[in-house]
Image 1: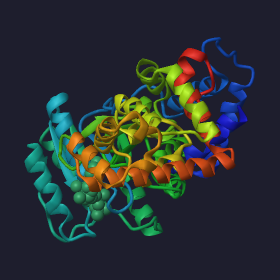
Image 2: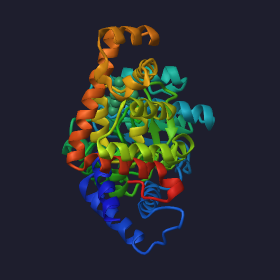
Image 3: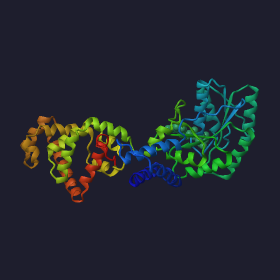
Image 4: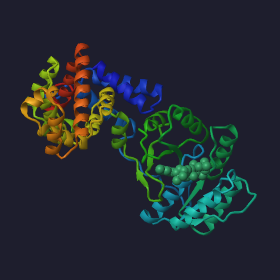
Length: 431
Ligand SMILES: Nc1nc2c(ncn2[C@@H]2O[C@H](COP(=O)(O)OP(=O)(O)OP(=O)(O)O)[C@@H](O)[C@H]2O)c(=O)[nH]1
Ligand SMILES: [Mg+2]
């Protein structure tokens, strides 16, 4: 179990969850995991993964939390966050969402007097979202604009007023004082901290600073359409206690989703879809054949026949990197295989080339001279060059295996892969 917890600690750090949050979380999980009953059908490792996954979902808020609109109209929503985090875009997205889904009459107001084009940017978004925008009056302070927005909303009976504020490169006192004053003046039903999902270790200090200044009621994570793992979500949630309510999924106005703790938990953990892998593997991999192969590899006997049969099995499961992506802690092997350039299309070619060889040639590729290679190339619809490339790769692979064998690595690797693949049937550990 310690091994599993170590993997999880690394996965969390890798996903950019802040260190103190990781420590805290792992300690909690350990407490839960020790003494938890291990079901007969799963391994302790799998059990830990499940406990962690559940704890992570819980820590991320469990169920999605909707925006709080339980307040007297006009309901103010205040948007805060660092520069470029996506406040203005998200303001437009929320406006569109409230107008179309909740049938609310929404007023957008830009309090950003820092960036010259900021107010115009929001006006454009309002146009696209088909909601009203507070007319721009040059020279007003953010606080004056906030008052004017609320006045207009009362006068013209708006349901919701979204106040977009200016961002700064990092938290500064003047910004915090400004936002604090606005908050105190309008008393928002929601004060949403908008954060980029790419935020790393500074997620904690950012969230703490904003929370202390304006009491965050919710968090919006933007750019979850990118490849950030989203570990900042756990950090921010953990230091503020505020729920993550919405997820930005792109630049377009309708690219806003309810935040789904389950989905983000899987992403943060990056343990991969172990259950999915086990199912897929059980359905596709011939267990007996895999074991036979492992033994051959362990003995350093591995010929082109074995190579072809391995390729076929892997091809059945889909792309290699996809499979490797599902396995935790195999980054190194994945890299080695990537270096060996083993892609699905290459697989097919290789299988065809090996299929055009005689059994003798497959067992002993050294006898392959020019004329035989020419025959094989035309038989498989490839070229002599490609045949040479395969032979070179096979050679490299054999060398790599022999080297790994010496270090006891091949066996370990096969064991690791096999236990992950056979986990469902044999009840072995997934890593
Ligand atoms: N891919 C992606 N891009 C986003 C998302 N949200 C915002 N953006 C982009 O991020 C950039 C900055 O967004 P803004 O909304 O202007 O950010 P801001 O926080 O208002 O910036 P400042 O007002 O300068 O502090 C824009 O190019 C947006 O299109 C998102 O969820 N996904
Ligand atoms: Mg902005």
